[in-house]
Length: 74
Length: 161
Image (cartoon, rainbow over all chains, first blue to last red; front, side, top):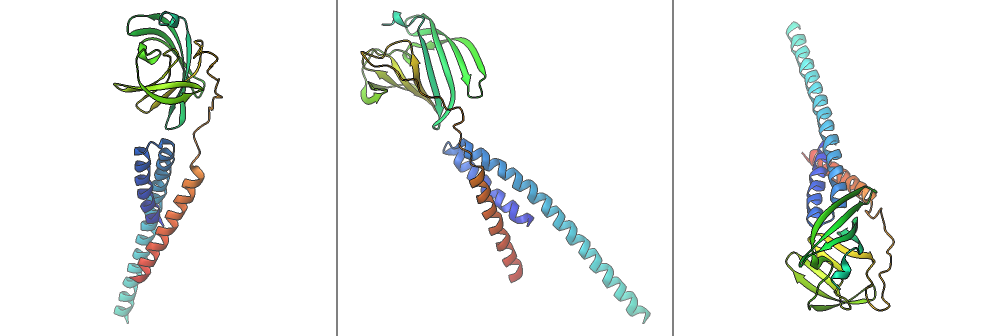
């Protein structure tokens, strides 16, 4: 989900620059504000995603260690 | 005509990309050959006022020369003249400059104590202090469409792997 916000913010930033060159400053400003919000949300969501993934991978690693210990005991 | 400009008042509406930027209330204090000394009041769209005295070129108010006929402004026939940095529209009756374009700024005479011509008066235009359109709803929809599109695109790519 976070990556989709960041990709969208890049498109919005490009559109903002294009509209600014055509003199549509109000639209350009609005697009700029949305770019900022999308980047902000995107970075937070990517951070949450990566934290969740690292925790699940740690859980998987500890499960594998348990399996190895159990096999050794048996 | 030139001497008549002293103590006359001009109100200009300045638009940029078809949106009202500010008003200029100009009272001419003194005249020399090519310049005027004027008391300028800059009226911002939020009601803030900025008052200053400045020297301005005379051709922004009065132009005595020839140009290309360019239709009518407020019922007065005008001709256009290209000067360095400016495109001015001059009243063909008395040489009064009714509008000029300088860069992004479009200066239009909104009212004046100088008559434009016999039986021709500058109508008082209704000022619009909230001209900027609000693009927030359309940009919100655009953002939602972009985010959902990318979300499904990334989801499909992940599932295809």
